[in-house]
Image 1 (tube, chains in turn brown, cyan):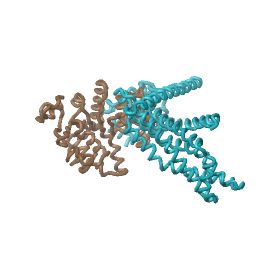
Image 2 (spheres, helix red, strand yellow; image 1 turned 90 degrees about the horizontal axis):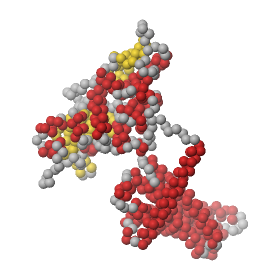
Image 3 (spheres, chains in turn green, orange; image 1 turned 120 degrees about the vertical axis):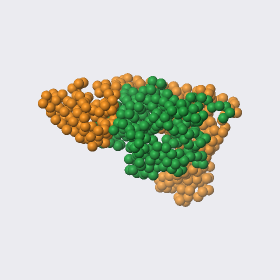
Length: 259
Length: 370
């Protein structure tokens, strides 16, 4: 139901994840949990491995060692139908939108519904239009991605990620490139879905106002330590953290020249 | 699972009691049933009782919105929905969703359509003329200032256009020589005239077929590659980046490709000439015409002007192939399919132009008596 119980088993469990490219290790032995129904934000400077971590959590990359369990099932080991069943539980919005360029927005949203459900065509059409109207694109259902702006493409990508009402939505930099009003509306939408539908959000973002407004919990990655340097409520971290890098991040200070 | 119970109340209302879990996988049955029930009772007010709905996601909300849309506002009501789901339902205005907010553009009348297409063709022609002008200017500039040419790019493209194409050009021209010789030798044998097959191969290959086939192969191979490469750069705004750096995309992208094609196409044509003659000679061996006789016969009929007639064409073909490939790449609009379109258009218009220009050359040579 709608309320989330924080003491139940985590919806995503990452254990001992070591990841990188070739000989370069970006994340070394990283472990954390994402709780059901929370808005979980991954923070970190450029090159700290945020996107790499996200790609491992959605099963796009195989780690050098460690495991990622989505709702109890290991996404790395799963194959075939078991893997499809796990992927059915998640929706992903990529940084660039990654909409299919030769299909209209409505067709982009319809695709997962057509593949995974047996609903009638006009029922799917209604759902697709509702998803697009949720992100403010009801006027553009018949447009091709190339015909709308970059910010609109992102919103359409969120609508597509939500098509099957997944348990977990992964958003890679959702508000980058959006105007403040649309960005605030998106935050409100995320909060509403998290609260009313128990959807868990895993978000990679840099937008401080957005983080303070929506995040229940954050983890902060650091390139030098190759792992998590801070974890918890962002408001408390800003006030109470003793780590200079964390304070610097939340207070938007430049790195001292000597460091 | 989702379930539906239909009852009539004493005051004449139709009650649709939904229960269970409403999500994309469970609502298939109840959706159709509810619609039919509402349609079957056109004069009754409808109440959708959602008191026993345990879970309702976006698809479930869509079902409720659809039921609200079945009649004019107010005639269908959703009652007892849990507050959490009610908030989700409140986000949508069923009547607003019912209107098609993004209707397809109305079809134009036929005359207007013809006009638009003609204007499009005119615009395409204008772009081609502008492009020819820009390219010619860039080439002349490059010729006068060879140091400004990006030679590293030129050699890299030369390798891909020339050396990498050798095997396919060799295979096709060898087979062409073999087929042409074989097909013509059989009827000629009836007249004891097999020896003249050597004349035919020599003239047809050197004047026409070797340059044309090489050019068509290159249009399919390199023309398409140029269009796809530059098209992807256009989509990724790399061409915009060059322009805003104050660098001319024609000089950076088009000139090296045209120079590379100009260097490689004639060489490949020369190679195709030789290999196709070899193919013809080998075939004629089986018709008892020895190698020496073949060479003698070809020497006798093909003179230097015949060879040059084909060789000169290959330079013009090179400019056509590279130019069209680059132009189509630069004309790419946006999206993955646009790159595919650019490559297709490069090959199609490349081949059409090759054949047309070859025809022009044939007329020209006839008039000049070459």
